[in-house]
Image (cartoon, rainbow, N blue to C red; front, side, top):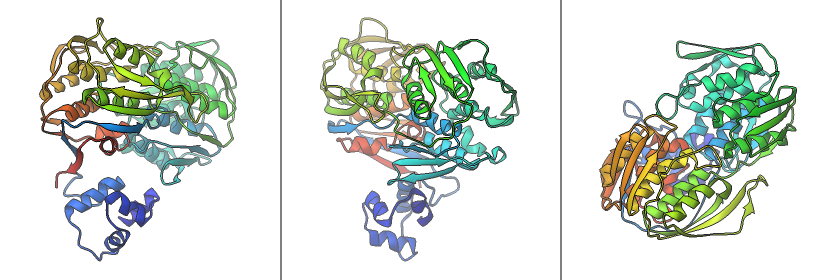
Length: 496
């Protein structure tokens, strides 16, 4: 317990505050001078994100939700998950120190940190675990790479771009993450071949060989994917000369990566468009201090929480540039809200607003709801519209054309009373309004559908249980506790 506390950089007093206990009690427990129940040990493990005690294998974390409550008050949007994991990988582009501010403490971030530490990167939490310092070694020890951690996150693919500048041969394990059907890595490989990367796939590994060169013409991506674009940008950042990338994603996490690289001295033209010109530098040696912008998908999650519970809440620090289409669709559906004047995020670039969400009489939209690459409706925000549609009057068609099978997970809303019809692996039809009722549900293995189900449980009468919520913790920091701060009644527990 003491080692886990120190690993987080906490004092005994800070741990006591998180446990609702006293510093003297924590001191006695750490010295073995106080009897402790298994339930308390499980609670300590949850707070410290460490398995203090296990019976057999570590038990999964579950959520017990008392539904039918009304939310109230204000809640801040935290740093972007997808931008943060890209910036962690981008820290390998410079030989200097990287400091990332206000980092979201989520499982996806922890897994990438474990991978970076395993290959020799010094990683330190600063300022009460809100900031992160990364100091790369002169040489990475890829033979020591933490394969278990790497397999638990698809973000490990974002190491391809930085590593091709540091090693002529390297291996990465197959990527994990959400179970969203067949997700080929070919677009990544296609984007990186012009930089000399070739990959053979065998025995659960990507075996990479690099023959350094630079693209001899503009790089045209066959898929306007966020992580594909980020890999191409990172490869271009340390390639001397100008690399043109066409059909690039201009989404929020890509913009954050560009702003980060500009502080390192890499000139990037066309940020926010689908054509980028990266003025690469062969060696990046400077230190960098950067604050990722706020997460538009978390903002959409909080909007959904307010609408499903028919509540009046204020969502502060919402990145409006990446929510405008979603809000336009919601206005068509009857959303009652105000937004503040725009102000700048800490990075000085991203535009933020505060949103006042009020109880709204919702109706189904005339057209189907479907995602598009930015500036269209965000792919990750689409599942929230299934929950919102279930609260609206009328029938809504949700078309998730990007991912095979993700729409299937939305049918679990039916167990809470929603009328959701699966038309095919990409489309569901939702009829509302719904008289929500509590149920016990196993958490879907896909992040956003899992959160939609949790938010619907807030609206459901009675008690609901959502089992094994690791996938939610991959993308959200203390979501249950933060919702509790604005009126939710969610209890975290483990089977003991």
